[in-house]
Amino acid sequence: MKNKTQELRALDSAHYIHPFTNTAALAKKGARIITRGEGVYIWDSEGHKIFDAMSGLWCVNVGYGREALARAAYRQLTELPFYNSFFQTANEPAIRLAKLLTEISPPKFKHVFFTGSGSESNDTIVRLVRHYWTCLGNPNKNVIISRWNGYHGSTMAGASLSGMKAMHEQGGLPIPDIEHIEQPYWFGVGRAANPTLTRDEFGVHAARWLEEKIVAIGPERVAAFIGEPVQGAGGVIIPPKTYWPEIQRICNKYGILLISDEVICGFGRTGNWWGCETMGFSPDLMAFAKGVTSGYVPLGGVMVSDKVADVVIRHGDFNHGYTYSGHPVACAVAIENINIIRGEALVTQIRDDSGVYLKAQFEALVDHPLVGEAEACGFMAGLVLVKSKSPLEMFDADLEAGMVCRAHCFDSGLIMRAVGDRMIIAPPLVTTRAQIDEMIALIRHCLDLTYADVKARGWL
Ligand SMILES: *Cc1c(COP(=O)(O)O)cnc(C)c1O
Image (tube, rainbow, N blue to C red):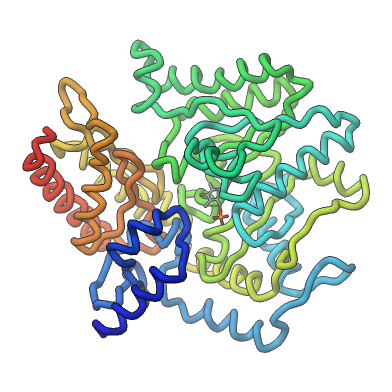
C-alpha cells in the first residue's frame, strides 16, 4: 500500500500537470491519491476516511457509490457508446434527457443545447447571445457583463466571463467585449462601499452597478448580463434577497438578456431545481453541468427560453457544437441521476428539512472566536475567518489563514475548501441530519485547531 502510494506520487509529479495548481510545490509534498467513495465519504490510498463536504467539486450531489448510475452507463455503453447529433441524427438518451430537463425547468424553457462541461456551456452562451442579437439586426449589441469574483469556467470565454484576475493574467484575457462589475458581497464589499446601508439596501445598491455599467457602455451595445444565483467558487457569496429582482428589473428596462449560470446551483442545491427560483428571477438562458450527472460522467448544457429559441431556430443554422454534444452515455447517466433526485425527493428535502437544519447548524458557528460571518443557502455555505470580531479586523491576506484552516481540515478527515479567508462547503444533497451533525462537529474541531495554531504563530 505504502509503496504504491509512493510510486503513484512519483509518477504524478513526473507527468501530471494538475488544474489550478502550483505543480512544483505539489511535487515536493506529493498529491493525496483518492481511491474510492461511498455516500458522503471518500478514502485515500493510505486508508484515511474523509468527509467530503465539497461533493467532489460541487457535483457529486447524490453521493458516491450509486450502482444505478453505473448500471445506466454500462447499459448504454454496451448498446450504443457513441453517436453524434451533427448530421441530422440523434440518440434516444439525448432526446429523452432534453424532454426531462424541460419538465424540471420553468415553462419558458422548452429547448436545450448539450455540451461537455460548464465552461463549454458558457462558451455556447457567448456565441448564442451574440448570434441572437445579430439575427435581430443588432450585430453590435455584443457586450456581455459579468461580475468580479464570479466563476464561469476556464475556457477562453468562460475565463473571460469569470471575474478572477489571476486567470485573466494568463493567456491574454479577457476576450473583447466582456465587462465586469463589482460583486454583491455584503460582508466583503458592502460595508466597505457604504457602511450606512443595511444588507438589503446594499443588494439594490449593488444591482445598480449594473445599470451604471449599461448606461456607460450604451444599452444598444449590451447583449446580456450573466451571474451565478449564489457565487460558488468565489467563496459562496449569497447576495441580499433584494439583489436579483433589481437585476431583473434593470435587464428588462434596457432590453438585455439575463443569464443564470446554474452550474453549481442547478439540480437542487439551493432547495429548488434551479438557483434562480430560490433567488426570485427569471433568466432567458441557464448554463448547467456538474450536478446534472452528479459528476459521474462529464455533461453540460444550456437551457434556452422560447424568447431566444424562437429567433435562433427561425434563423437557420447555428454553426456551433461539440463532438460530445448529447453524448448517449452521459445523457443516460443524467436521466438516471435526475430520476434518483426525484425519487428520493431531494429537492424538497433540502428546501424543507435537511437544508433548513444545515443552515441553522452552520450559521451557529458564528459564535466561534475566529468566525466573523457564517451563512448558508440550501446545501452551500461559507464562513469568514477574522482576526478579531470587535473591533472587526481581518487577517493580513498574505498570511493565508484560510490555507492554515484547510490544512487542519485535511488532516482531520474533512474536505472544506478555502477561498481567501472564506471557508466553504457544499455537501452531497443526500447528507443526513446525523451526518450534518458529524460535519459541523468536524468543522468546529478544525476551527479550534486553527485558532490554537494562529495564536501560536502570533497572528491574533
Ligand atoms: C464549475 C463551474 C463552471 C465551469 O464548469 P466546468 O465543467 O469546470 O467547465 C462554470 N460555472 C460555474 C458557476 C461553475 O461553478
